[in-house]
Image (cartoon, rainbow, N blue to C red; front, top):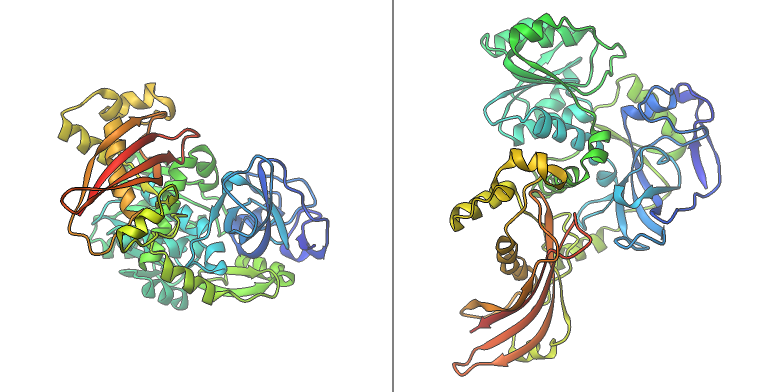
Length: 502
């Protein structure tokens, strides 16, 4: 296969375009035929041996890819050959093929093209983790983004607006700031021409900013820190300027602010379930049009070193993408899939079967109804169920005690809350036309082989067991339902349901 190889540590001009051996997946890995690979700042660090992860030479840079599954290891059950996927490989992406661990791979929703898929996770994942998990950004707060026209910076501008913040974009040129304005920035600062500290003071009327997201470092860090509000949060994301700033920590004391590191790569490994939930939320925002990737330029594989050099020279606004091979997106197939499947993005759900008559239902007895979309069981949902049922056992509602005593530090959902989600998910699988009423009549059997934890994503698999007519002209459906969780090998609920239709 063709690949860009780093055979000795150095700058992008030392990378070589050459032929190399095809990788072979291990039992827990997947072989992906790469369609596109995004260009990220860690790629520049990793080829200089300056990044936290240090692969052995020779290797290909490129940590975020999209493509087609070509082969799967013997222990991989959730992915199959020919499936469109996006993956966080860490390195190896500037090549025609790459092997990736199965738990770092996600199905591409049908309305997401390869270029967008390959350019979404790192930048938006980093920015969302920074704002949501680290800063806990609130609506109405003021967010300052340093290096706002880059991949992570521009993602932070959009996400900040989507989360209800007032966003101040800071960048080094009018051209870069114009892109930030188009993405929704409320205020703009050209820190090459303006005094950053004074402009922050002017824009915030002396209050300061609540959150700073800094991907630049260097000389801009200290004036940004001086522009913090009381109890502000300073997010250290990267050092694109090259220099790691030496901050006067007396300012941190005086402002009562927090300086927080943002290392999304490690977060995604240490807290995979929370990261997966973030990714699903991001994909949903893309589908709804709240956020969108800005593609700076598309390069072919041989030109990948040029893309890295332009990123190093800070010429890239948004995302640079490497397209691997000569291919065209199958837009017709994507549109056809969209017209058939209205499930939320990232759901991996099956296409619902439409039943128009009793005869249609009877013909389907003994067959699968399909798989629903994923839904998240949040702590808020668990709390509301506790309030409704007056069941306030600590395993459900005491988050601090759960952190100390329960696996993963998460509260457990009530068993009957899990069961109550079944009708909501079943609606995805059983669209019925021309009915007056659908009533959840009861259950013959139910059990809960595994618990559902706060933040878990669950979905339903169902099979139609039987159909019986009733004396009033309606009919009963007997349905075998099995709910699964992303966080459990066992099902979390198994039930035989009875639904009354009229």
